[in-house]
Image 1 (cartoon, rainbow, N blue to C red):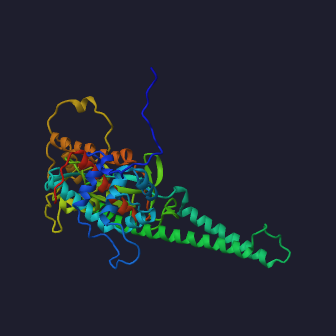
Image 2: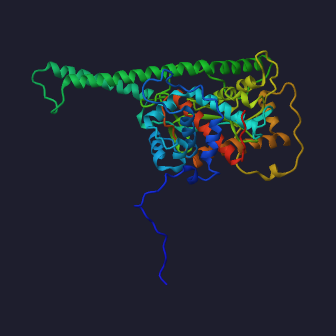
Image 3: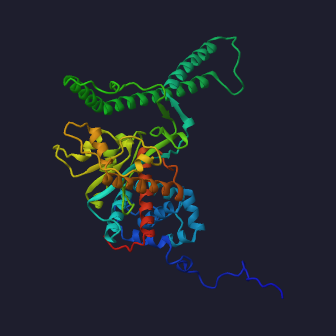
Length: 462
């Protein structure tokens, strides 16, 4: 008996236009995002109120398209434009319209206020459907390095910039001397002395600008680090006055001059070379505060400094008010600073704020020793004269404290893993700290909606 095959006819047109709703499964993510965006207030979107020029795409559709694309691992505006033709779910969302990549990129760049407002409103929706419990939250704060849209090979160090400027000065002098010599050897065809002098002068001006920027950064860094240095120095002087010998090295005053290896990137000057899993890369430090029960991102911000100690208060302040008051904060040893933790645990008047920070005071090796497996009583509570480090270490030395602190690695680190591995977001598409912050808000918004979708949330108006 001859084999039978399904008839594949590429030539006969459809008798009736297709209904895209029949081509997308009812439980598809795109329907959930369309329903969620339909409940958001998008009046913060920038639109042409005069109505001049071509007709505009509705802000709700554009916002939904960006969120769905980022939740699906598509970040380039050109790839998003292509998906409006090739992806059935995207065609359903866009109602078979096709915004071009310039329109998408402009909407993304100009609507930071809309993205921030939408991020807070999605948390309100999460609270309304019971996924996020408002108030008394425990959040885990951490940072991850995300590649900038720039190569580290487009960067110059402070020391190298100075050396290149001296080399350029010598070359300019040689070219000017050659111009005054009537019998000098001519340059290669197509090259002229004035153009070569101008090219070197322009390069020298760029290097001078880079050095000036690095000097300004070093001064700002020194001013930020000075209070911590003065606090440590005062504590050591107080110990000496009390007859005690201070432990550890003497604190050194912060330097206001750049180090020889300080970097400036010509492609994205606000990005920095930071240590990441793959070595040293041109990055931004993306921060997130994750609620431990729902695993929703409730606060986020992007820093240009690789050090997390400076980011604890800033990331905590970025937690949306829609999430309600925070009771407990979990951080790793990279965030530990007495000044930063006291800023969270006390208010402006110095009274307790009701926030308690649990942090590791040092790096712990993976796995547990036999001694750690043995059952033992909680250590005694430190006395009134105990140092800040001793009191902080006691919080995670108790059984209850260890149990609470373990929630950190179970929440915020998997969130970063999902964003980088499942969604594939490893590099920012935009450049500059303001635009990069906008894009991190967008990826956090997309992650939250996808998290609600997989949690089976039934959205209700906030």
